[in-house]
Amino acid sequence: MTAINSGPKAMLTGGESERKQAKMPPLALIWAFAWATVSANVSAANELVSVGEVIAERGETASGFLSFAGSTSRGVDIPVTIINGAGNGPLLALIAGVHGMETAPQAALHRIRREIDPADISGAIIIVHRVNVESFRQRTAYLNPLDGKNMNRVFPGNVQGSMSERAAAAITHHVIDQADYLVDMHAGDANEDLAPYVYVPMTGDREQDVSTIALARAFGVGRYLPIDISTTDFEAPIFLDFTAAVRGVTTITTETGSRGEAASWAVDLASNGVRGVLAHLGMTNKGPYLEQTAEVWLSAAEIFPAPKNGFFAASVTSGAEVQEGDEIGRLFDPFGDVIAIVSAPFDGWVNYVIATPPANEGDPLAMISRFGTPPLD
Image (cartoon, rainbow, N blue to C red; front, side, top):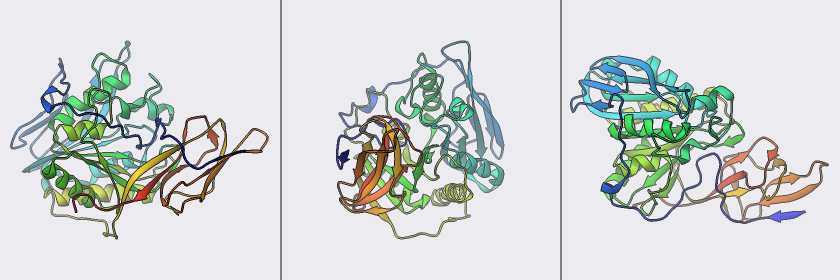
């Protein structure tokens, strides 16, 4: 039996926890795309907003597909909606389904599409209902089954790359590059018992960082995890939110939902969070819809990987506060003998814990954050 109470941070294959750091190049050197399809664009007065061939004039809602060719003969159609408000205002991008089995945000965006009248909106909303179409269709956690890649590790993408890279390139060019604000909406994947929280990317640009903190608070789930991206290596493929933030887009990543389920509480939380953002940005005079609870700021999250293959049984649930030495879970061999005990190496808060037994060596078993303080205070 092996006792595990610390160890290297995992090269995470799912969730939203691996945040690499290195050196940031000048913004002018960030990779740009050459694109042969119809450009995404929005006029200063949002007279016309387009995403690929989906076009909405002022006061209209339009839905359709952002289509692109695959690396084989098979193409991909990403469902999108544009709600182009009757009044002038910012462009807000709402993106779900980068991990296809994170379904609660997808259901929340269905609700937003049904309930938001463009006559009540100032500015425009681009909704990407589901980026990782094949992952959803085949019910796969973490990875795109077409190329075996985690789509949230390949942004800003590559128009000549694999299917995940091409999808990332399409989203970067058609959505991120025209957004003023962006919410990348995630949840617990099919195997993750996850408690709600928000990632808050900190760029080192004070004006942008103040705007990002305000956006996170407007979404309103009450737990916030700042991520310092001021020294991130943008020459390597990275996360969607990093890609947007370095382009000057005020961006947050939300985590609302658990175990791949579109549970009503999680759908309510995500859709009401979006309405809070709309109210905060002055795009609507309705909302916010969430009661503001006491804030909890987190820091220095760590992932705890499985030390070997086994049958994992969690001893805690997501959202639990743990103390150093508390048992997180146990790993069993095929005969039911304990081969490892995972325990917390510090006091903290459980962002998520794996809720299904299969564990392969190196797979994340849990994520725990330390308690922190609000940035910039």
